[in-house]
Length: 147
Image (cartoon, rainbow, N blue to C red):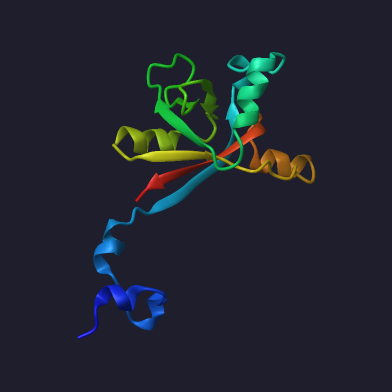
């Protein structure tokens, strides 16, 4: 019988080899939301050289942290957005956060990553349909849920 390690090397999955243990260990993530940070103007002073440098380090693919803020006086579904260095940047917009907040409260795990800056909306109708007025797309990000 052939050695499974030798069969696996260089052979695509469709060739018939399937490592069910490796597949079971693999974590699946589901894209839940693409958005911009809300309230960033209250947490990041873009006039400060130090704060601009913080933003410049947040390139596409950079991980962000999400924390539930159930005691927030303005939004009971608040989710704070932080850098991995514990620097608060703002919030997930209140117009899109309730479902994610409920899932976080139920124990679901979420990860967030900085995205490329999206193309601006073609017109005012598209902007109103796709973006909340509180979202700042200078720092767009995506939120994924572990499956």
